[in-house]
Amino acid sequence: MIREATKEDVTCIVEMALIMWESNLEELAEEFEMALENEECVIYLYCVDNMPIGFAQCGLRHDYVEGTESSPVGYLEGIFIREQYRKKGYAGDLLTKCEKWVKQKGCSEFASDCELNNNVSLAFHMNTGFKEANRIICFTKRI
Image 1 (tube, helix red, strand yellow):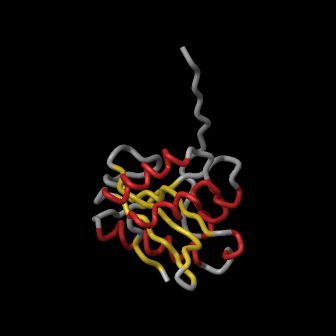
Image 2 (cartoon, rainbow, N blue to C red):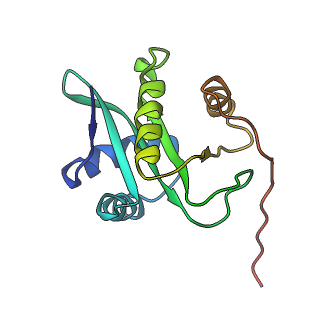
Image 3 (cartoon, one colour):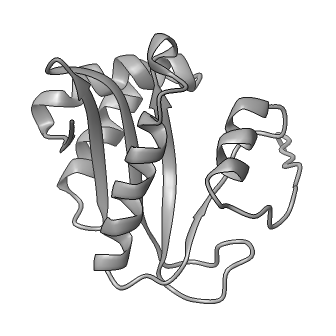
């Protein structure tokens, strides 16, 4: 079952997100709480036996999104399924739910990204109809 997340779900979303992303617990919790208050963002939970086993976060981006031609663009910010529940189509179901949401928000394009070395995410994106738009390496330095 897929349901829209609420503020009461932030702890379990953060727990799953920390498996996927290297981040700070407090920063993630704050980020998800803000997302849940934002009309241009949604987080869906996939539940099995009423237990959240995955989530997808998507939102609207009004700035330029690589490879797109319209604005706003629906953007898959993150998608995660606990390892023991993978390969059952749950992530695809979450993606479909996100795509419906962004269409309802007036978007005609949907985008996402993944790290260059994240082959699992790359395969997921390619297998669900995304087309690669570009590859970049970002740099920073202290000055």
